[in-house]
Image 1: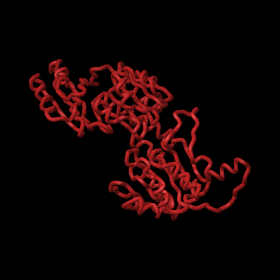
Image 2 (image 1 turned 120 degrees about the vertical axis):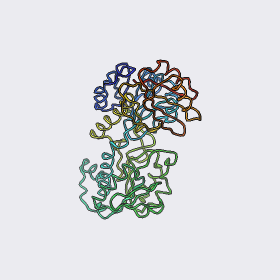
Image 3 (image 1 turned 90 degrees about the vertical axis):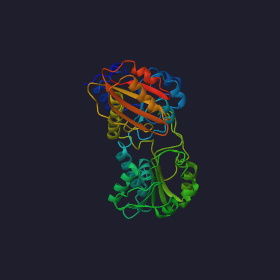
Image 4 (image 1 turned 120 degrees about the horizontal axis):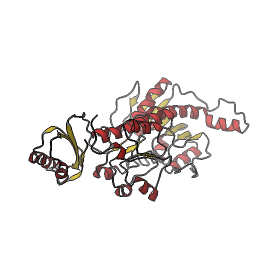
Length: 409
């Protein structure tokens, strides 16, 4: 086993928001024992204090790692988002500090897709209202307003990992599937891509949203889009809370333009279970409201814990950035009998030439070198013979444009 230059027992890790035990187990199995595990998110001075002296941090969706928070960190080298999204992290600010951000884009895909299918059945049968009535002692035994999924048309907005999984499950239920995406996407099964939202919405009995949070998706589903939906249709949002204009949706439900909705994400969500949840959608008929639990199954959280923890370990142990969302992606095998150096620099002319001059002037025997760039960053992994001068790290750090240099092993 190649020994790291910085002992693993000295690498401090903080995991917030009750990240699954599998993450701790995966880190411990790789030799990382200095792990602080907190059940809640943190903000303000509490978050700043928790990150002081920390090399790796793991969060879910509530903790916000803003530029101001990152400015106050002193040893942070990587971030793990134990979820799909990474909008809770200032990605560019992390990148220019040489801090890659990893997430789990696939591990809770099935959980979200299954919830969406369950909500379709609930809405078409009015199960939420019928269940509440039965709890009150009312017996609403009627087929009025109840329908099968089979033979209806589903419109999917955003045909990525989750949207395409919903598509596959929906066809198994006998639904006709249309989808809209800003990019051409290969259809699953008999699904068909539609050129625009305007063309798709009037055709659908159910519309489900699966887009990432961005400036383009903010309020993308407002009064105009809702009015384009077929009268009596249903809307499901398990993507991001900023995508749907909630007041416009509430108005369409009160006016009975829509027959129901299922919403799992909201523009403003409670920070903890003690804070009261409030929404204009409360107490409206045939509306299913869930507390951001699309990916909250034990199976998903277990898989996410393993996936993200392994990415953090691969970066810390080998310099591998495969899967980083804000960083050049590099994957290289371990080279025995070598020193591995990591150099993160601004992507500007002359940096690689200066690095190679340092190597040449130091008589370094280079066993391997690999460079990847983004428009802003360059990341080069250099394997050199163990007899190389110990001052090489300092010389590389002095190269103009360098953000961070590290002797990995």
